[in-house]
Image (cartoon, rainbow, N blue to C red; front, top):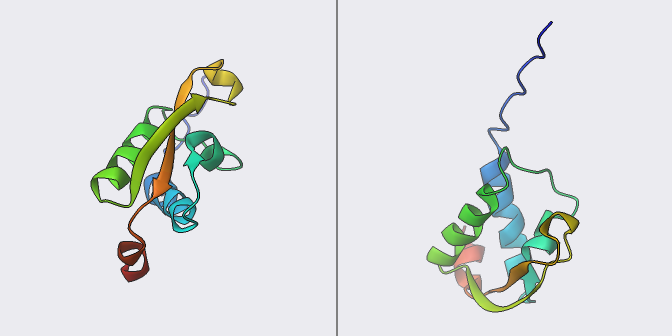
Length: 93
């Protein structure tokens, strides 16, 4: 007997954008490790890159550095450090 195919999480993208914006509003530096902690995973892990790219293009976050990832699946790979830059845009949304 075959296994049922899991349904795609249609709200994941909007929820992830909201989550990163919440980190941006603090004005403190953060990484994708921080954002992903306690949050559901997307259908494909590469979707996280699109979230950060979208918000950087909107002027909500900016890249401020690098560090080793604390995520075990990344095996110590480099991850970006981000920071919110445009609080007026976030308040108007």
